[in-house]
Image (cartoon, rainbow, N blue to C red; front, side, top):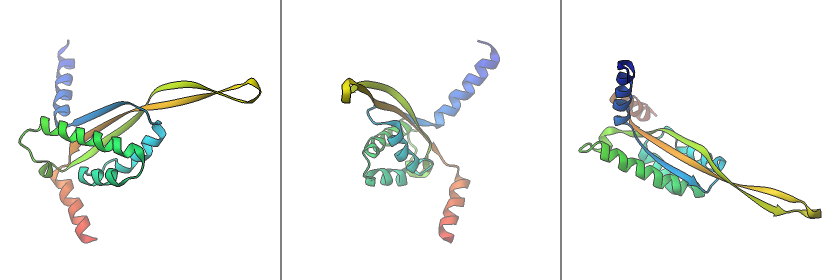
Length: 145
């Protein structure tokens, strides 16, 4: 490997150390339904996101809640000795991709058949800590309101 590639690979490794992520694959829910819930918690603080997911009546919210708890546990493993409250974690990215599609046949009138597509999805959550300056600005905005 050339030195330039080696340096960029090391830089990417260092950037990934501050990020914590969790993946959930082959969820038997359509990506469209999962994205509705994922859009609710994108760029939210983790405490608020956990509350939103716990109180949301939609079925994908339960799976995202468990995935977020897994991402928090992964962050704790990477950052041993650091308190979650001090790091001000938030959901940096949440990505919902289409997964495998099961194709089924439903009988239709006059000898025809309709295809049913049972969709699935893959979800990836990345957590990151906010800078102290950003946290101070948001707290002053909240106090002004």
